[in-house]
Image 1: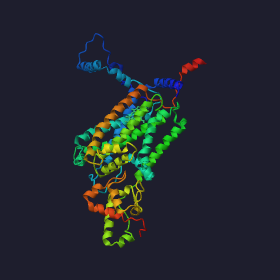
Image 2: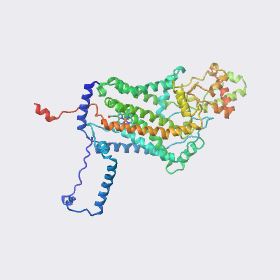
Image 3: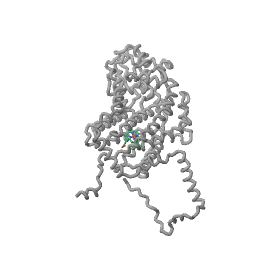
Length: 252
Length: 266
Ligand code: HEM
């Protein structure tokens, strides 16, 4: 807006303001009514939905679903959409940071005098697009289950290694299923496709030691399973044994 | 805007209170009580001089066409107040250390008087506040309310948005159950992947390279002291600017010239 447009706006605004009503009591009454609705809905939600408390936090296990509060789903979903590991920082922090900067600077790059949404096609479209995108990502996040069962038969090569191996395979499968891995990884038909890579053929990509090392010292955002290793080495070993049998061959 | 003129009660003229005659003395207790109230306000105002501020805040005009969308900002503020008040009550029972935290939350939920209710209000209030802040932001965005002369208020608003999300993030850990624990571990790790400041940020949040007992008290301090203080201060600045500039008129409103002027011209 140039100087003339600013003056024009201020003049027009002062006329509209003078034709308006006093804040007290007119606006206060509306705000008050709205406040009652807001606090009323909160009370209602609290009464109807309550406040659940899950099992106590435990660094060593299991049966957890690493899910954020629903209004962070859209951020988490970005991770699923953007897969390649070298782009992950972009998804996690890059895109949100850029959006934040764009949001902060909005009044400095959109300085036109026009205020009616239908005459600001770019701004309005961008706004609607953002709302739809965030809504869609939130929906995806809400729909993504976090299964804690794995349906996967021991492959022929596992069975060939004898019953002890099969037993360990099954035990490790249990640990994996209970440790929330499937919230981010996919094995066969089980689990979510990302942010982490598929684990079907993890053993052909990483040797056993490297798998164990990754579990203890993973690349972010994966949580570390160091506590599991320290406090329950047997379960940890089962998990590693299970993973190091996943060679990506036919599971029949 | 609905008309909110409160009509005087329909009493027959004979029953209306008579205006006091100048020479009449004030005797009744009611008279004294009235005087005392006004006197106390006058006493405070004489020393504080806040009545000008009150008039400035309350008796300003809101432009023609102001509608229900304009209540979203104050609704966000009320949601924040709800969080502040219920939060104080939760803090009376909550114990921010890794050993007792879960137990204290369990106590709030199961034993404290109205504990689960207050906890539920705090929990669901956070969702409501996030929804309202986004709606309020959408309103100001589509109405072009971030334009001259209210740019700064938009910037303050974005800071409030970020702080509100940070509140949600830090508060989520506090019940210290499995879900909140692991979600926060992953969340902090995600922060850590950020460029440049990322690793420092997650070290700051965790209080070291690992997720330890320190982490919980850190989150607690951030959640109940640092950010709420910042939010309260910024809301103050936000509302100061709102009052100073006045709220926008809806973008489709046009100032009409006085119709009498127009007829005169012809
Ligand atoms: C804690 C959060 C917030 C509170 C309590 C709050 C409160 C308010 C209130 C009470 C108003 C008065 C008019 C109205 O209700 O529309 C207002 C106006 C405004 N707010 Fe906020 N707000 C918050 C967050 C935000 C955010 C996130 C933004 C945008 C990024 C924002 C931008 C604005 C702007 C530009 C105005 C001027 C609107 C106009 O004059 O029409 N606010 N805010």
